[in-house]
Amino acid sequence: MKPFGKLFPVMILALATLLATSVSAQTTSSVANAAVVNAAQPQVTFAKEVAPILQAKCQDCHHAGGMAPMSLVTYEETRPWAAAMKQRVETRMMPPWHLDKTVGIQKFQNDLSLSDEQIATIVRWANEGAPLGNPKDMPAAKQWPTEGGWQLAKQFGQPDIVVDSGTYTMAAHGQDVWWKPLTDLPITEPRWVRAVEIRPATPDGRRIMHHVLARLQQDEPDLRKTLFTGNDADSNGPGMLMEWAIGKNYDIYRPNTGKLLLPGSHIWWELHLHSVGQEITSHAQLAIYLYPKGQEPKYRTYLMSYTANPTVDGQLSLDIPPNTVKMTEGFHVLKQPAILENFQPHMHLRGKAMSMEAILPDGSTRMLSYVDHFNFAWMTNYIYADDAAPELPAGTILHITAWHDNTVNNPNNPDPNQWVGWGERTVDEMSHAWVNVTFITDEDYQSYVAKQKSQVASAAPAR
Image (cartoon, rainbow, N blue to C red):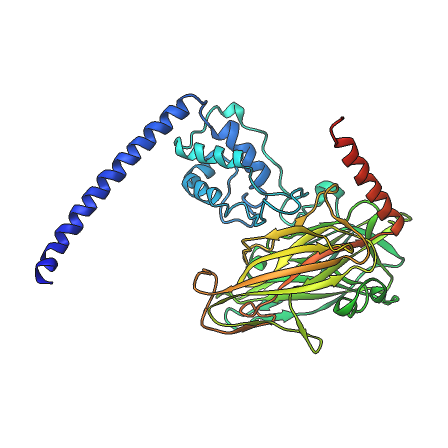
């Protein structure tokens, strides 16, 4: 072993030299090949090609005063981040769209994802030195809501009602807090809601708010037992107006659908707060956009929490052993035909993936959506496009499957050697999908089926 020990450094040096020469040759060859390819293509510039992509997909967060840590509006702001942008889009870390694009529904109202062509454009721009190009090619700058403005104001105008949670001071250090104040709604007659939006009222508030729930409480007959089965029917009253989390800011109900507010109703808030090393006082706000007086939508929408957890004695249960990837599932029956408006997986730090599948009464299955690389930092809400939202018959079973990664391979895992169970703390786990469900009549569902058959027949090639 002694002679080998003396030779070992020499062998390493020789191998390193060989590898460096090989890599250098490969790099030179790759650069030369890229130069040949790019010589035949016009240069990609920020002004003409990149800025429109950023406006469409990135600047909602990446502008001054937005939630992102840097602005990507002007060339001067964006140029220093060119290499980082290339890495993030190549790996599909950004924009935050964690859906598997090979299965399920792929048409969404709020699709933030980049196409392969858009990714290639940003990568080429970075590789070519991130040039500005002709400033005259720049698109007109987007206009952002003023400080304290609402995102939905550009579509609906100013909200009809703004509800405030009241302020809470979160200590610099300490356990998670669930603050649950009650706020009256200024409603003197029944009114229908067409959209809702929630926000932390201050930039610092975003730092301490894990999520915000706005539950609607009002006296009315409990309709859930006629619509839902099992644990889904146990919730009292009209249920949730909305849940806010990073990546989900608002809900817009489809035409002729909405939620009903009655006189004497309240918002029962739940603000999940965590300490960030600084004492912060903040509050949440809820904007409510109403249908015009006298206009009543045909259908009522329910925000459901469809679990992938088993229940034990009526209590949600999770059992995730140390150093394992655990799969759990839940089943939920639709007692009437329904339209599913969206899919929003909710898990915590060990969350890995979640799917929503429809098991139809005839025994066939249909994969609706599959988030294959869930990211706890982004509770993205996937809102189906109007012509893509699934309409399902009565008796359909919604099959929700969740995977938790409690291993060292999960970079968000605080301790893979710990057992993890169900709980509300960030270090505990959950597994449910937030889904807005609109129940429709059998007649409307049959009309939908007939329309689908007609479209299939008209698309068939002539014989």
